[in-house]
Image (tube, rainbow, N blue to C red; front, side, top):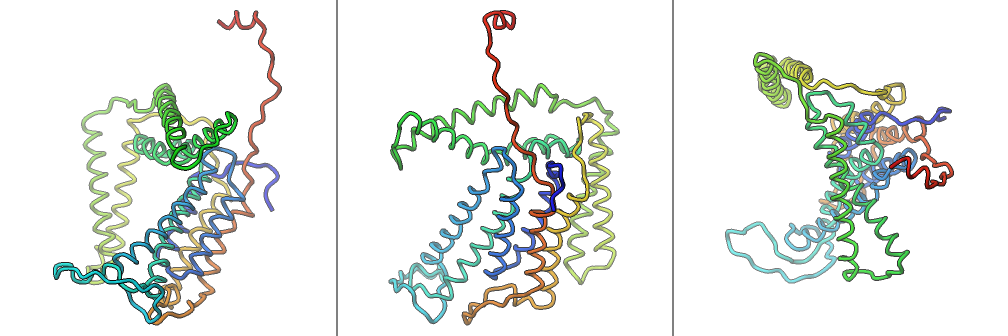
Length: 376
């Protein structure tokens, strides 16, 4: 049952949940599991998205995923490897020179190969939908102020980047409503110039407003630090990245010595965090009303991590159950452990606080000439 007082869940919690769900489906081609993950992401978005412009951007990611699946299928028909026994679409095959051996241009489209291509495209589409769910649920402005001071510049660029799609969606909707009010019913290619130009103009205006707002709040301004502090920060950051790379290689390669695995990775993470902490000293800033991190945030992150852990457990015990059997083509298995892990990722739709309602404006007060004169 949701708490009595609505509030916004911490944006980092939503991103942690989405990354866990995306990691869970990244190693899956089983359509049952992929559709389950997509349904979980859609359920959480429909239940916990707010009234902000970016909350309506999830549909764009779904259309992008459908486009990816379609392109993947078309590429398979054009240049994909055709295999299987059931011929769906007989097409002539174009002979290619010897240097292009292994590439089939056209040819008979067979059911097994087409199903394999569609499931691979569906996997990428579901991963994009998971990231789109985080973009629709997490407030990018609140996400920016939770980042460490050393990552403020990078965070600003990332926030501006991930808000492009929601702002474009909001601009397109407003332009379409304005055209409908003016009686403009043109559709298709003829309406593209009438929609694209106002959308681009609105995007430019929003960019200028965002730049002015960030400049007025001191973004990009840094304090004076000594050369020794800069050198120590660079050494910790570079050393942490190198040690992390060596540690990841040691963890993935079982033939390397033991000290190149988890110890080197832990050392790299520690040095990187130290570099971030030292770099944040040059970017002093204050946060007004920091976002709380309570049980709802822990539950959100844990549910996404549970989905990833459940899929990894199935991968180690029965990896074939996570794939789509195409040689020969069969009905995929239904690993209950993976399904249960993905369903656990739907808990934020029921156990996290509801988003706050949209702000309502009271009755407008008529501005008298005296008020206008006094304001000027």
